[in-house]
Image (cartoon, rainbow, N blue to C red):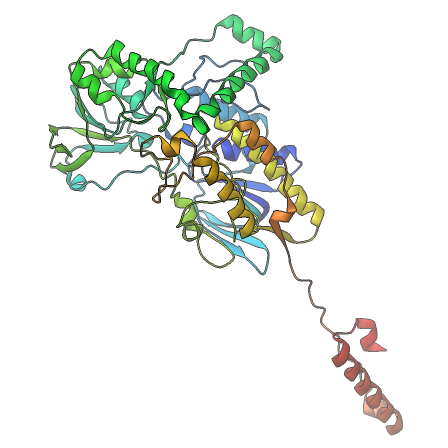
Length: 539
């Protein structure tokens, strides 16, 4: 076990949020921090998700930090390998590597009220920190449903985010469970090599064409020589997506035209009317995340693919059974069933001022002031917290806004001076949450007629931000101290020095009597006024 280490800031996680926080801390002149990462490398979701076909559905020049532009993206929509390499490069370029503590999984973080600090236990030692930044992200802990009989399956089982590269799917019979963003990339990647692919689809997604191409050499050269051209490209991509937001958040009926385009996309690839009916959603486009692929529908039309329009009900030996009774004998089951988003496991490991976990506080639904701070958890901040997700743009924009808020949060603590903590007022958290949820009522995510991973167990959307990224940037420009209670460590009480009493044999009795009377008077004075100074005690 490593020895105990105290730091000003402890960052948990080393994906885009954690690396971004580390870079921002250094740019603010703060070097007394660590990044605690449970894995053996940085990258977050882009390290964990290495399944066949893994790529981003946000354009490359928008899916990067504004302070670290990459003129050499190879494609307009880059793959996992290039995004992970970008994060490694940012880690090195901005001097984050010495702050990393790899293989340090946080098992418990508890607020120490008397010391105004966080006490942190990890798998490889203990730490304490004045401030904790939780950047574990919502797509970090895979979710596999509790399927009866799964434990007795005789074949191979793994989640898309924990892909088993040692298991060769060639010639195998494979069940793919789920039809989210990962599944629509996996299916066309493995379909040509497997003997048979059975897709279990609870709800069909809306899938639009993916306008992807290689970025040419001259384009990359231009971006290197004239960085302003890359900035302009990023700005154009951002602006287009900002204009789309109102259709999702205020006027969902405007999405009807896009729905018709999506249906044409299905019809172009799926000629079988029965299969086409299975793949056509019955809810409003945008209610679930809109997915991008040119290969998904053509893969489903191949003769070695079966689409089961139901969820996976149970497993009997090596036979998978759908809720509609469909059976298939398979050699492997791949789960593309998402992550613990509204019930993030890290919340069960963080304990606040009242000794209760964040998971207990959030039992009725996640809520954080400006998506960052939770009531009862002083000097704790989350990156990509409640209601900061996006349905149509780049999460890097939201992360950078939260980093602005983090920077000002730390500045405010410095200005206040001494051992200080900021605790989000419950009234401020509740007011912010009410405002967000009121705006959410008009959105397609709430009223589009679907069930999605955006919603928690109570049916509330605690995941997405119901506005533009520009609005969020303005809301997180700085910390409003009226929304926080300022906590200060109590000043140490000085220990009084005992009064000096002369030795009786060294002074006459009368002098001794006088000394005793004087000491008694001083003691009485101290009992009325409190502890005296050292000078007062020896006079």
